[in-house]
Length: 452
Image 1 (cartoon, rainbow, N blue to C red):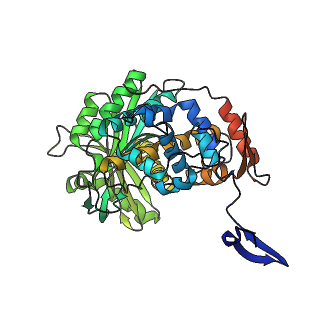
Image 2 (cartoon, one colour):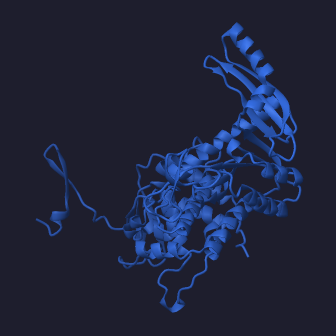
Image 3 (cartoon, rainbow, N blue to C red):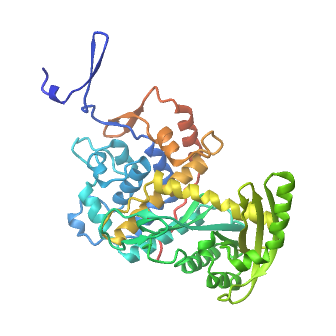
């Protein structure tokens, strides 16, 4: 019996042959695809900019791990599917991860990246000012990702729940979600993420929306003075002060409006027409019209799109307030309803990139984790939009991209002059992997400036 026989894993025999395994393979990684994310980051400078936004109070003479390697380690780890800090107790030795964070795998087998306690201390020393600067960095990265000024941008605002994992700062019960949770706010532009802002749940769902919109407007118009900005959201964000600010700053809005007796009374004729058509055809009917409505608390009346729908389940009226010119049916179907795509992006954040892993005791540390997840999403979205352009995976979810592109087995051969990743010869997506790398080679490096 060999010395390590006690560590063997035994499987059912193959005929007369024993099938055994162990974890003594050495410099082998299952995550070679992280090198693709490294290529994306080197063309954006995102992780360096995020690191520059965080002050480092440590004594330089006692530093073992450079600060910029730690956010890189966490962001790449999240993208690879390792959401827990404890995962890094072994991932810190992974040769692909070492290269991804710009650390050459040492010829010494015990050399490693930061451990989970070191990463935990890093997460818990990030303060509010650093979080603000990091948030601005995401917006700067979005701006830098455009080669030409866009004519118009539609910004989607939406909130979701992040379940509380214990007695943490900012712990409150939310009636709608029927649980103790946080209430993070996201802002997207198409598939691009601009804002990921953690909030306690004992607030109005639209809280801080106007302040965030002001910041976005300031930065976007500083870069593109003539860009037309339109915001899109559900009825939880319909607040008259937000609408008034948009009106006075030339911001378009297409926002859901909760039904009430006054609106239902104003649309009763259209609803009756839809019901008559349904009774005659027995098929779903949708009619559109425009009314001008102002609640008692509003400063003035505004244009409201009425969708009068009648189905086999009965009447289903919907209302949308807007200051954007255009036909009612077009604004409803082609503009407002498209906001549903943002829910898919939030699912990618929450489920695929673990933005709901807000299990730290400190609220600010949880906000930091949300931003780490958001940064992982930015890299994955850029990989999808640029690297996978024109391929069968151009619209793939992040979980699919991770499975097919990032989870690639290889053996790392480290010498004084080279690090060679000998990838699996049986990897089924070799051509796709090569196509992605080729697509990325044509992208010029863009380094967003760190916030002042």
